[in-house]
Length: 611
Image 1 (cartoon, one colour):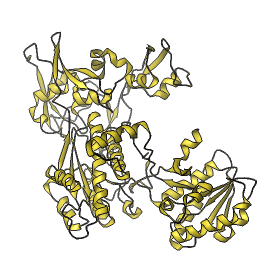
Image 2 (cartoon, helix red, strand yellow; image 1 turned 120 degrees about the vertical axis):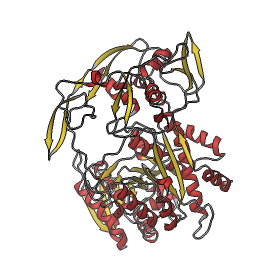
Image 3 (cartoon, helix red, strand yellow; image 1 turned 90 degrees about the vertical axis):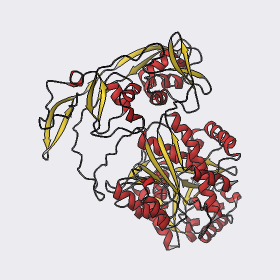
Image 4 (cartoon, helix red, strand yellow; image 1 turned 180 degrees about the horizontal axis):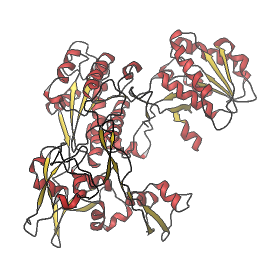
C-alpha cells in the first residue's frame, strides 16, 4: 500500500493548486455567478483572492453571510466583468510598466477594474506571473489615473510610470528614495447583533480582530445577545509613511540586510524527503515510513491553503540520503526559480541544500532538528524545531516566571555533554525578567538533592540530562528521599527524551509531576484535530501520526508566513515563534509547550493553569 502510494506520488510529482476555474456557473436575473461550496478553512479574504471579487460584492450577493461562512453551504460569487448578457465593450487601454512587488489584485484595485479584465487584456498573464519591468495593458488612461503635479519624474526614463503616492524624492547614498504620502480613512459602523451571531462570526464578517471589538465596546466577554449594538471600527489605511530604501543591485549571501522577496501570483515549493522509493543503499523502512507520513500530512494542508486562495506548484524529491542525488536535483531545470525548500531530514543533506539556498536566495525550512551551526551566517534557514539548548533556555525562563514561591533546585549533571543544557537553564533563569521576584536558584549535585528538599513549599527540581543511565540514578535518589517533601510537593523537570525512557515508569512520572519542554503538543481531542483527522482517515484509511501532523503544520504555517502576509492559520500541534540571534543568522523556533504527565496522560500545563 505504501509503495503504491509513493509510486503514484512520483508519477505525479507536481501538485498544483490555484483559482478554481471549474466552479459551476448560474444565471440569476440576468447576472452570472460562480456557485461555490464552502469548505472548512474558507474565509472571505480567501474567496476574494480565489475569485478576484471584492469581499463586499460577495457579501451583497449572499445576505446569509452576516452570520459568517459555514462549511457545506453554497454561496454565489459574482463573475467579474460578466459578459453573459451583453457583448464585450470596447475598452480604452494604456501601457503600464509593472513595478517590483505589484500583483494582479493590487493592479485591479489601482485601476478600478477586475483581475479577469487585466488578464483578458493581457492573455500571457493567464500562463505566467507578473514580472518587474513587464509592459502590460490596463484599462483607461494611465497619465490621467496616476499623474500628480508634485511628482518628480526622472526625465531620463520616459517609459517609467510614476508612483501616484509620491510627494517628493530624496537622495540616500546617491540612490533615489521616495517619501510616501499617508492617507487614513477610519469609519465606525453600528452593527445590531442578529440571532445566532457570535463574536467570532462578526469578527470574520468585518475582518476586525475580536480583541479590537471588545476594546471599542468596553466588553470583557465575547457573549452576545440578539439586538445588542456593537461599534465596529473599519480602518482603511491607504499606504503607510516610510522612506523606501534603495534595493541592492546584487544579493549578498554573506550580508545582514533584510532580503526582499518577489511577490508572485504563483509560487514554487520543493520538498526534499528520504522516501527511498527504490530501497537501495542505506534503506530504512522507518525513515521511509516517516517521510510518507510527513508527505500525507502536507497534502491535507494543501487543501486549506487552496481555500485561502494560494497559488503554488509543489515538487517532491527523493533524497535517498545521497548527496549526488540531491546535487542533481538542485541543478535540474525543474528546481529553477524555486521560492521555498522544505526538508531534508539528515544533517549532511541539510548542509548541502542550505548552502545552495544561501547562494541563490531561497528560503529553506528544516522540519526536524538541525545543528545550530547551520543557521550561523545563513539568513535563509528556518529551523522549525528548537535545539535542546533553546528548549532548556526557554524552560529556565518559564520556571523563573511560574515558581516564584517555591524551592527551585538545579541538579548538575555528571555527563560533560549535558553541561550545555545545565548552563543554558542556569543563565536563562538568572537573567529572566519576571513580574515578581523569582525564587533563589539552589544549585547542587545529584547526591545532595535530598538536603535541599523542604515541606514548607513545593520542590521544583530540574535535572537537565538526556542520558538514560543518569536519569535513572536521579529517579532512585528522589524516590529514597521523597519523605523530606510534602505529598505531591515534588515537580521534576527533565527533558523530552525522558518520555521514551521505559526504565522510568509512569508511576514515578505521575507521583512527581514529571514535566519537560517541547516544541509540539498533540491533543487528538480538539475540534480541529478531530476534523482534520476525520478527513485524513477518509483519504488514507488511517489516523494521523505525529509526522503527518508535523507535515500539515509546517506547510500551512510557512506558506502563510512567507506568501500570505502571515494570514492567521489554525495549527494542530505547533505554535511558531521564529527569531534570529543576529541579522546575519538564520531563524529558530523559540516557542515551547511545557508538558506534564497527569493521571498517566501528557497534558499542556497552560491548559492546567486555565482550569
